[in-house]
Length: 197
Image 1 (spheres, rainbow, N blue to C red):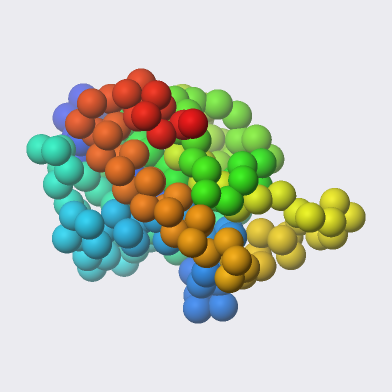
Image 2: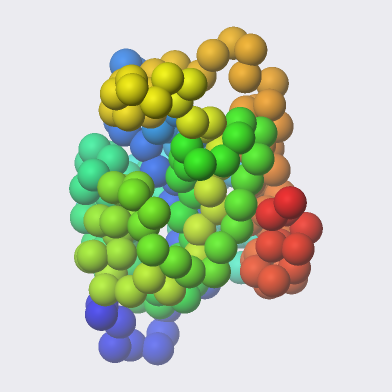
């Protein structure tokens, strides 16, 4: 565990997972990046700082001082950024929210969880290993399963979101913004009841 001090510079850390680089923009695996960019725009936050393996910025949501984070490692090493920033700013693990893609959810759906296993997602797996706990809030963004079960999973998640799915996908990432604000203002139970349909 990273945290010994009870005093934190921020009330929450909210991270969106993805892969850096223009070639990965609008891919299924970058759903977390897309959602956190929308959240940043909504609250007027800019990703001005680039260190600790991440782009990050500061914002305020419902009176809470929030650190918004986009890891700049590749997906499988997302824990390096989340771990370093949560340690440096002394943000407890129960005040961390992670947004990421989930192939088990249909496009357009989101699911909020208080804790849980990685469920096969390598970015979450790395964060759990680095932080030493599964008790991390997460918002899963549906990107849909492979239509051909014989096709390569890597190619699926690194594939572009189809035009026919974009409207539903954009609606889901919009819901993520509302969900984060609900968690910070009324708690995760309220958010799960409201958004994990």
